[in-house]
Image 1 (tube, rainbow, N blue to C red):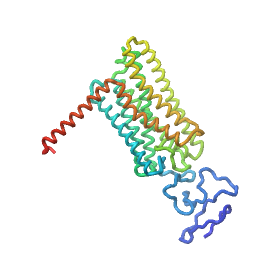
Image 2: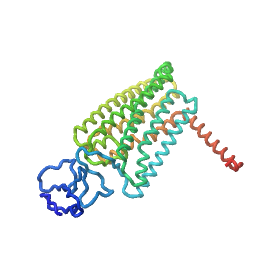
Image 3: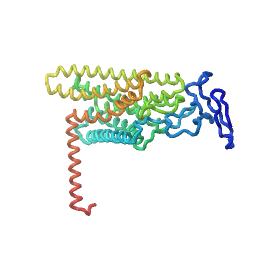
Image 4: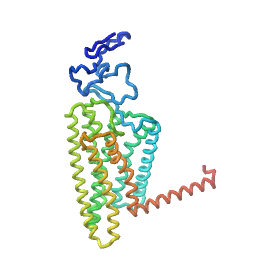
Length: 392
């Protein structure tokens, strides 16, 4: 039957021919009458109880966003596709796989070396062990999903999967920043107050500070995750990011009041992080002043070699994450968002093991000893298997 919209002319509705009740069709704008809010269904869509299907048939698999009415729920999100061609998708997969394996190997070696070598059972390496665990968990919440999307040419992530990914990522990255603050305090006491190092950073104090970092990250993530996903989403389900990120989810909010509620929480968290950053900077100013007063050239070199990598990682992490979360919408672009998120979510977990293993001589010796034992065991196993094949 013909359905007249009164604006752009008739549309054919075949529902009566199939024995169904005709469904109203959302008219297209064009006459200048009325105002279509930003959450409305696309023009030419047929409405069925709050959901819309584009006129002319059901939505295809390449639809970028699924528009929904105000107050509707999202069952899944569509993550950013890195490339349209199959060759580039596979290239991204192998690139991410290489980065992920390097991060797994580097952080895994640090964890094993610190846990197995009794010479590394000191506060500095205890915090480094926790940093490696956080890096390993943080990169494992984002890259495996991105690799699967590139390999299988998919984009969807379930609502519960997005909640879990965002919560775990915020927990681990927030705890990492708090732990970097604790590590700055550790270096300050070790260089500026070496006589009080044992009393201020005993084993119990180190455990308490590490637990406080993990617990603070958990509470921070719980607050932001609960508030973000309590906001009604009406602007579709497409995210311009390769993982679930708060700024991208807030773009889907229905009203500005819902958006601003989470923005104020982000500003509060940014102020807290900035306070920690100021503490880190002040600690390193005191450290550098003490280092420059050292009479020994070797002592100054060792102090700088242990502090500068930490300062570089903190600066990269805090600058990119702050800019990513606090930048104004006028300077937002998909490419810029992707680069910033890559710099604060992928680069530090992958680069941390390389920086610390190259700068700390004790850790280098422990890693060399660990890899030497591995190769000796491998050669011994190969020799035994070849000489005594019945052992197989």
